[in-house]
Length: 81
Image (cartoon, rainbow, N blue to C red):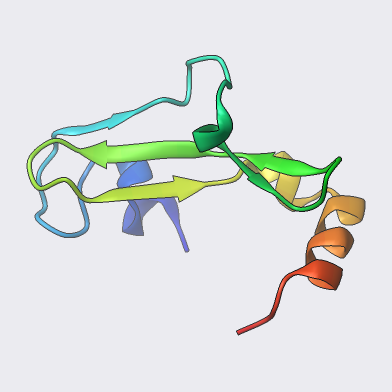
């Protein structure tokens, strides 16, 4: 999915508003900001929120997507749909 088809571009995909805000430049903190893959591996999430309609999207970083060990662990523990 390209940035143009997500809220990463600054436009909400649900209501087309440009009232989209993100936590991408804030420090990672709290359990809400991560997805556990195992007891020692996790993804940090970047959230995009539309203040017009409340729609939100969350993404892991490009670096984490390229981490082969992390991806292998996820594939071995999560169910593929």
